[in-house]
Image 1 (cartoon, rainbow, N blue to C red):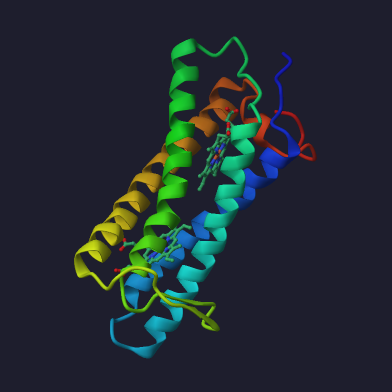
Image 2: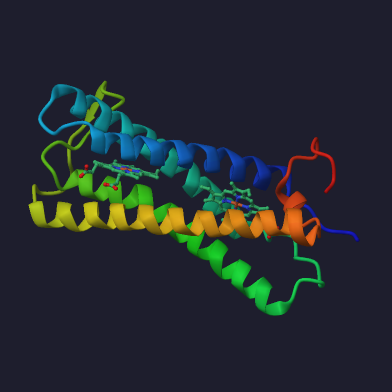
Length: 182
Ligand code: HEM
Ligand code: HEM
């Protein structure tokens, strides 16, 4: 069966962002372990904000690239309803990938701290200091992190089903060419 692959750019962006996002999740949870008020917290929070901004910019590049490049069509053997669910999940993954860094970035600009980029360059906040606006975007950041995690778990299970149960080569569409065809 001939199955069209994703392009090299799509594959590189997919796996690079997946690894960076999973690391950023772990970093976010680690932040929760650091007590408020200790100096280390500000150091690590600013590091999380800085890496998050860089990942956010990479995500914007990916979204821009995706909007200008069509993905390869799924094989006809995949039922229509399953193809629609896959597209809907992918769109939602993109939306949450944008909401994550954006909500964190906006929240930071409504606190008096702003962002100290890699603890070197201070970007003063462009918003007013507002506990309410900060709380809204901070809560969005938290809720989006759980939604994204749940969707990624679903996404991984769907991928593994194609690889191990259906064995229809859908999984290999997103694998670099150096991996043997499965
Ligand atoms: C790139 C994607 C990002 C991911 C996946 C991510 C993930 C997370 C996670 C999982 C948490 C812990 C949430 C919880 O309490 O359960 C967190 C906390 C936090 N994130 Fe992010 N983050 C990202 C980007 C950013 C950016 C760009 C900023 C700001 C510029 C930011 C600022 C914060 C802050 C300040 C907290 C601590 C909130 C608190 O303790 O109240 N994050 N992040
Ligand atoms: C943070 C983690 C991840 C995110 C945000 C993510 C997001 C995405 C998105 C948005 C697409 C659709 C690409 C497009 O058509 O534009 C996609 C495709 C894909 N992802 Fe992931 N992914 C993640 C992790 C993983 C992991 C760990 C696996 C391995 C099981 C995986 C396997 C795949 C496969 C096989 C495809 C191609 C699906 C197809 O052929 O239609 N992804 N991913």
